[in-house]
Length: 421
Image 1 (cartoon, rainbow, N blue to C red):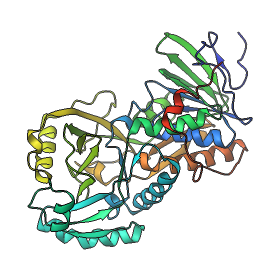
Image 2 (cartoon, one colour; image 1 turned 135 degrees about the vertical axis):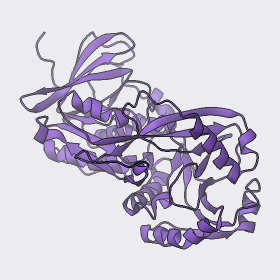
Image 3 (tube, rainbow, N blue to C red; image 1 turned 30 degrees about the vertical axis):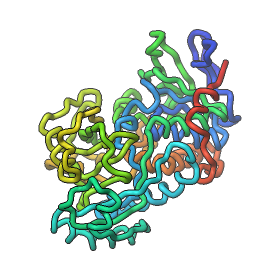
């Protein structure tokens, strides 16, 4: 069999559902995006909107990695206002954009930062100054005001601050971006795992994937590959002989079967364990702890972390500990790591920036392979803009980004906009 035409899948003929085959949208270069979490989904949307032909390959279901196991917090940036001001500014800017472009899928309920101790109250002024510097609007609240708005809070609270946090449902978040990409011809191949990035003559030529449903191998040729595999990004890059600096930092989260608050509840303190409770539909999700692992597919949940989370929830809401657990889970955050190995102390990952990085592996002999790491689901659109700018410059196919104003399709359109071969 000779070389596959650019942008086509080599392998058995496409099935009637259109699960394989060439992307039909865009007249531009063909880009393969590895990963259908929030970052990969946003990148696919941006690429398609700029006229690229796009194929997304995902080893599992949409949002089944880190995105699908996070809090679902639409960050105001306040959490990072003191410790990571760059990430804080990015979060509030993207928060405001998402409110406009994602009319379905967001619960714009707001959030509180609540003082539980005198030390928390002492931190308030530093917190307010950090928020002001980052452009995050705040409103100070007394204990009495908070208890009127959220009567299930502990009567021992001392006061707090309101910020424009919100909540999203991770699966629907990804689907909105992917539905919009598909409407412009992008193809999304779930349960297709990348087994190798294809490099020839120092240039990336595509990916070799395995269809995990049908058990067959496929070769997808491309002009560029964007590695948005989250905590698996280093493994994907390694198949091309490249390195991605990555810190895998999981955290335990617990969902209980009671919605305790109308709004997001954070602790008025620097980021730490068990300092946030996010209301998700009829549940409350508390998190998170933090430690590091070497393998994103093997994350045993430490029992003492579960106990710490339940104790932290009890401090906010009396009776929290007695509630039935709807789920206990953990997933690795793909944090930006150092280019060189360096000594790491216990808890160092808490201080690692929540900003993002995009690395072009040209100097490593894989021109056209781009790996993106770090960031937050809240900043996924911004990450996509930066990545697609870089890809477009390298390919000589530069088009202006439109995702700041382009309203996304409803999540359900993902299932009605599938490309049919």
